[in-house]
Image (cartoon, rainbow, N blue to C red):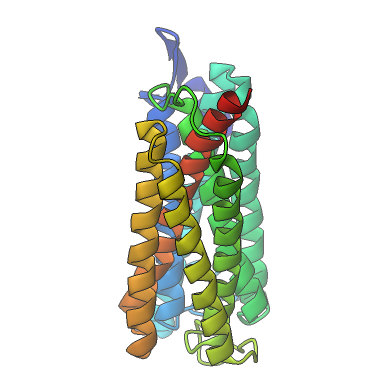
Length: 305
């Protein structure tokens, strides 16, 4: 497959193209694919379809495709697996586009996405074979968040229009780093909360045995810290470049929306649609935060010189 795709790659007017697409659109499609598979993976879990296909790489011991006996759960799980292959193809296309472009600054992030997608597929197989062990399921989600971060970096670096602003207040640099670090803690605690809650992906799947109320409150407290840091950053960057200030605003908006969804779902017994929205929102918050780091840290680095 890669060889066939490479034959279709062309360099036109200094821009690398794969199947008629230039580098920046390809990296954006790659990012969209990483976010989309979080939604379909959530659908598998929230509909109890995690073991709709009972083995890997086949769906059953006797069939690669779901059988009629597996019902809708088999179809949902198989569809998610199929999308995984699509995400892998997109990652290969993206890597080929970067390779053809000779943009060495993009090699690391393009490689990270391609290798990460392959690792994600292996982890997904392990998750099925271990009967949806809650710790591997959590790892599956956190790897997706890491892939979204890497895909965002790749897209921003490939996009020449995403020029970084000419310097800002150097004091905001540590706060931006803190926002990114606390977000990582929020994501881990959020995964622990889900792994301790009712949505196991299959009635027979185990849970973490952690106290759900305790983990939920720890997750909520980490969100409060994240909101406080982002508000402080908004104040600190008010006289800096408009691009950085807007990036902070997008992060804050995403946090507030995620917080609202989290509070509502906690008080309404975790309805599946809200949980799914919360999962996708986590991915979009990662995109916004990585973009803030991309714009803000480089700007602060120049301002500090």
